[in-house]
Image (cartoon, rainbow, N blue to C red; front, top):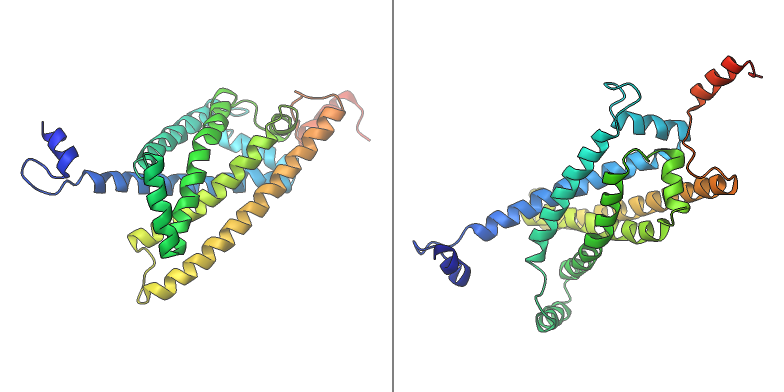
Length: 263
C-alpha cells in the first residue's frame, strides 16, 4: 500500500516527499558516468590499430590478462563485457523514466523546447534519440563481444567489421555513442555542478566548447579507426585469409628462424 500511495502522490505514508526519484537519478548519473568514461577508454584502446597491428595485438593480450595467464584468457573480456552490459541495461532502464510515454507527451515537450529555444533542452532530445538507438545497437555489439571474446585482434576484429558486414552497424553505433556520451557527461557536469566554480555561467560556456571539441575528436578518431579495420579486413578477404588469426612480428621471426628461412 505504501508503494501505491508513493506512486500516486509522490509522498510516503509519513507524508514526506519521496526520495525515490532522487535515488534513481543518482543511479542514472553514476551508471552514465561509468559508461561514458568506459567508452572513451574503449575508443582509445581500439584505436591502437592506428599505431600498428603488433601494438593492437599487445593491448588485446594485456586485456586478456597475459601478465597473469600464458597467452591471455578471453574469459576476462567476457566477464568485463557482461559487467558493462548489466550497467548498460540499468542505465537504459533509468533513462526510460524520462522519455515521453506517448505521442501527445512528445508533442508537449517538443513545443515547449521550441518555445524556449534553449540549447540544453535540444541537447536532451539528441541524447534521448541516440540513447534509444544505442539500446539496440549497443546490445548487439556487447552480445557479440560476450559470445566471441576470443575473436578480438588485428585480423579477427577486422574480419568481423568487413567480412561479417558489421561496419554499417558500427557507423551508426559510433555516431550514437559519441553524441550521447559527450552530451551526457556535459549534462552531468551541469546537473551536479562539478565545475561551476565562482562563475557558473562562464564555466558552462567553457564546458560546451570542451564538449564540442571532445565530440569532434572522438568522431574523427572513431571513423579513422573504423576505416583502418575495414581496410585490413578487405585486404584479408582479398588474400583469402578470412578467419586466420594475427601472429605478432616477433613470433613470425621466431618461426622463420626455426624453419631456417630468415632472410
